[in-house]
Length: 424
Image (cartoon, rainbow, N blue to C red):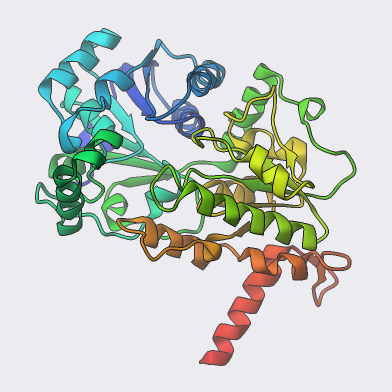
């Protein structure tokens, strides 16, 4: 018997049928890690179906997702369902019965015991949950968005900000032609919360939202995630010899993000921000290594190299669609830098690599929705890139009082604590 979120319980069948939805390659790895961990104590066998989707992904990125999926778990079927769960003309995050029926037909299954999702409010996951209404809902973390402050409205009522976004989209024909309808970022259907049975998350020392704490929380083991990463790296052949980066240099891995693709700033403003960060890396005595985001359009690398010639491309098989966590160990960078990337937390937790954010450099006056809250989370838990030159000066380490060496992140955290104590 396994507990539900309100004292209820359901019986795990002899053959457990799981339907797992995943929006990206890193989500596939996190879901597979939780499934492997659960399977150790599972009585009986499992029958697992993987549903893949991802708005705005290139064909190469889709191929990467399928390759990773085949490496991490023995799925009964792997199906790309983006055309069903997130069509461009689906109005305002609705969940139609036609989409749910089409999803069942696509994978050839009409019933399931568990449906695994990494979001509770978004349209694709809602379609999956609606297609298998009798299934228990199992949540696994999606990334930084999982930990955003609780601005959700767990009901069918529209959040005022959400309604305003939709009305702006509806009343501007030019905007409707360029963009898909805004997704409902603030709604969690009550039925999803009632069915929520388990939550699988890495212990990242971040506050867990209340709507997730009401379910059975199962920490995903670090060793399990690392074993899935190692198995994937071995299967697809990523090793240090395939990395196009200068040997013998101390590297700072800069991870791009599609901030302009999310309409948070213009492409030119985003480029200027990356140029500023690359020069800060140079000033700290490190070699800037650029990791393009798979959704960046157009890519930033060529313009970035023109303005900062020391920038080197970071790619495997001339491809930037692989998650950075797969090759972080091989690259052995001195630090990783990004704006809001979830990898800032995962790389630090899994590999002990110091991370920095340049979110302070972004022009955020026009940011709306949950973006300001996500930025606040990063600012609170990740040191600024402005500390880079100080942390990597001279020997680039700080000596602790007991003679041990403190990492850049530990030093920064200690200073924050000391400043906070003085202010009291």
